[in-house]
Image 1: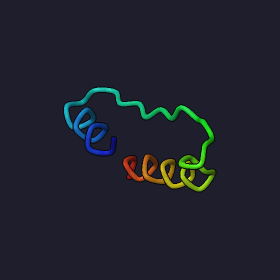
Image 2: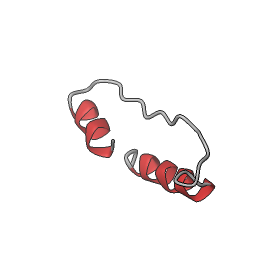
Image 3: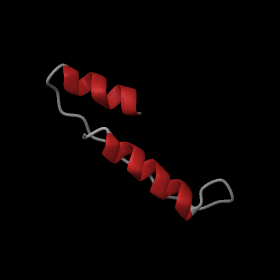
Image 4: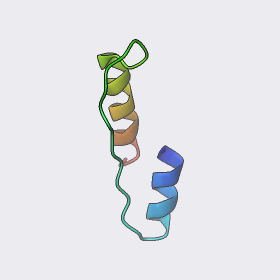
Amino acid sequence: MKAALQAVRSHGAHAQGTLSYTTSPAHTLQTWLDLTEQLLETRR
């Protein structure tokens, strides 16, 4: 997702990262926190 967001912005377009929250053994709170941090890093 990071590469896609950066590519869109490099062309002057608006990019939006969206998370669809769910819980399961594969989707823990830490999973969502890590993904959120990765998305926030694309702003830097």
